[in-house]
Figure 1 (cartoon, each protein chain N blue to C red):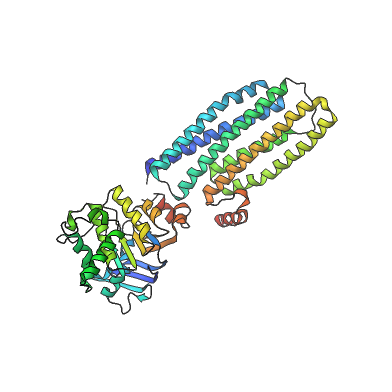
Figure 2: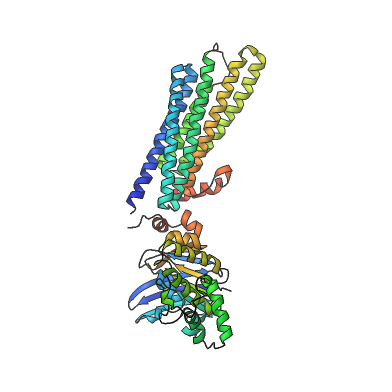
Length: 252
Length: 231
């Protein structure tokens, strides 16, 4: 099951440049939460702070508190420990190109010491089913490489790979921006189903996508969380004029 | 900025304003036709109806196009929903004006009767409601729309009073029953026009404040929001 996320007074920096300013947010467990905002507003930085991807960039640093369930992200938790509980899917599908479909999904489990072949097979099957990919690849699990799949299938393979280690939170950074409308529709349908078991945070430039998949939406601007509310409120009657200007396309 | 979208929104607003002008004119002409027993004005109202119907279709088509192609949100989405509802109300206002005109055409064939009801005063109040409802739309001001909602009670009372005195008149002077019945039906048509003006005002409040005030749902909270908007 998914767990909630609590972020308090989060500030993020790239060297001397501050990218996030005092962000406070509570993400509800087993719900999809969308983060929207113009390019460079800090939404991707924010999502990367949730699984400490941010610190992979030299000179980047964070202060503030982030809790994933009972786990304190920036206080004594290792990145490996954290990322077992927090899966991530990126903008561009990035399957391991030389590995088969099966090995792509099993990779995380093997890294975590899983060796039992039967258990691995079950986990791969379950993950591919959860990612709505099983029926399309079940006959070529070992024959085809991950890179041979279509873009939409590759992205669902990446979702399956993330789900295999049974995370509680799934972070998605523009997961459909490289996909056609049909593949996008499949991923959105998947998000809708997955939130029963996982807490999902999705960064998207596509406002209609946020409106379709998320129960809650946060609007970022210039590194600040301007408004966070139920999605229908953000898209029908937002509180802040800046949010309204953004969702109505009056920016710029 | 979304230039094409903004232009479509401007076009939609202008089309609705033209439609509003036609509906307002129809009511005014029908009321003048009543007070002056003027057949020419009645005919103008009937001719005007096809223009109103055509305008209604045009507005719906444009609103439908914008919804399908532009995915409007927030205040824009509320505006388009409000426009489509106001559009339907204005078309009904036109229908009521036609009903009044047809009633007047019947009345003109009968001898004039001295009736104890001031339809002219009621018509003035109803025309003012339609005009102010449309002004609230033009200005995008919820407080103007709220004032129209408050006028609806006055018109309701006028209609009730007209019923009482006209029924009494019919009992006392059966020879003017037909004229009294026509006046009573005109009073009812006018009251319906006032209801449409009320609906239009509610839609303007929904567009401007994002609040649903139909059936007295949120009148208290609206007053507070309007106060805070002003301060």
